[in-house]
Length: 123
Length: 273
Image 1 (cartoon, rainbow over the protein chains, first blue to last red):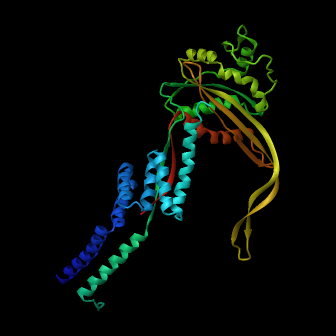
Image 2: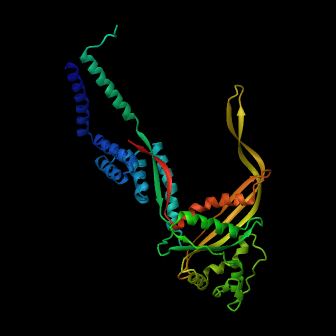
Image 3: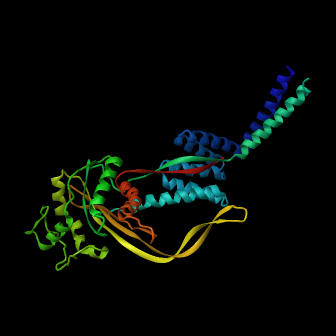
């Protein structure tokens, strides 16, 4: 009985602490949206991921990871203009982040190819 | 004999601490690699067409590869498997002869039947005996602008999308400093790869295809694109011309297919938490 009570107490402390934090900190609220977005993106539900990551950027407009993930989702959906803007915002917020830079470089290669497709027809 | 157990309260607290540490640890794992499949829209809207006809190419360069026949065969086989368009199986047109006939005037019968004269064939344009490089193709260029001729071909094959153009595949030699990777073993037998710069004679081939897409209903050029590929090999390495041709065409094919259908580029990105 005592064992069960102490377990519950410990759990309540952990959950309570995180609940208080999420109620106070927009970053934590945004983070839960980002995490959910990652879970659904890994299952291939990219539209839902976009919704989650857009919400995250609304809650915390300084959250570089959310913008980075949004860039990836827009790329997957073929929305290059929006992808570019999202990556650029992520880089603006965290210019030293190598993962974002790497994603952006790979995106630019594909974007250049897509631009060639639309820009040279009829030549 | 059993190990001493802590009091329930202490155990609970230590478990809670372990949980918090674990949660913090999970929090540190902030990158997730995800595969993505980016769609690249087709360069041409081919919805009005149900069929495609690769009619042939004006070609030249290396004598041991028939660049016209090989290009026709390769493009047709790619279109059969990677596009929704039905591929017309017909003998390639003798376009070089057609271009010469058109330049001579409308009364001259061509090998592929009477060819409407090109309106803008410059008078006195000389057709070279052999096509060796890009300059030799200039006299043939007006053929692709001859809408009347292509319209006629289109009518013959129930107005398909027509694919034609020019292909030059020619030998090339070059010498100079190149970077090579060399294996080096230290005194403990550990292997490292060191880049070294060496002078080398190399030979290979240059591939210059120009692909022209023509509307079989009107004879108008819809789109055209030129490519340049080059492969050089060490001079002691004997690479057959045909294998080099296919190696270089392999690099051109994704772009060719992307002209007619939306392609997907596979890659991976890093998601962050």
